[in-house]
Each structure stands twice: as C-alpha cells, then as structure tokens.
Length: 74
Image (cartoon, rainbow, N blue to C red; front, side):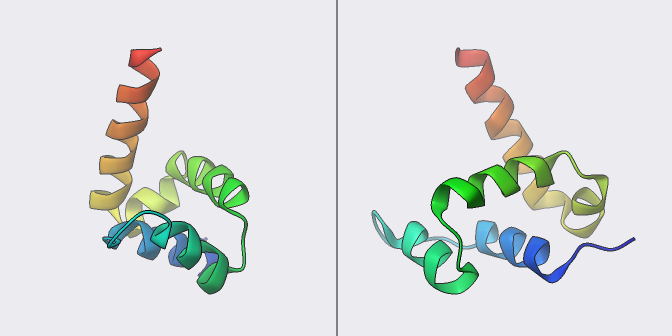
C-alpha cells in the first residue's frame, strides 16, 4: 500500500526551507488546511511508517535523527 496524497504533501513540506518565523506554520495552514498541532501529530506517526521511509528515506531518516536527539535531551 502506498502513501496517500496528504502524507506525501507532509513529507514534501518537510523537505522545504522556510524564510522566517511563522512561515512554516502559515504554509501548514494554507497548503494542507491543518493546524500546526495536528500536522506535527501526523508527521510523528508518519516517521514510524515504513511506507514513508520507502517514499522519502532522506527526509524520514533526518527527521528520525532529530526526534531521537530531542528525546535524548529529556
């Protein structure tokens, strides 16, 4: 089974760089019609999905490393 269009859009948004504070949150609302809180919930679940890893291994592995580093800081 393949990722849906929303999951692919979330990964595509994570590949982008944003120019300043608030720009990413604005893109989340405008492009995906999601609240930032819901977006990050979906993103976190997506990082554990092997289909996401197969679709975009570079982005998923980068985000997994960031998540693990933040968990280690706690």
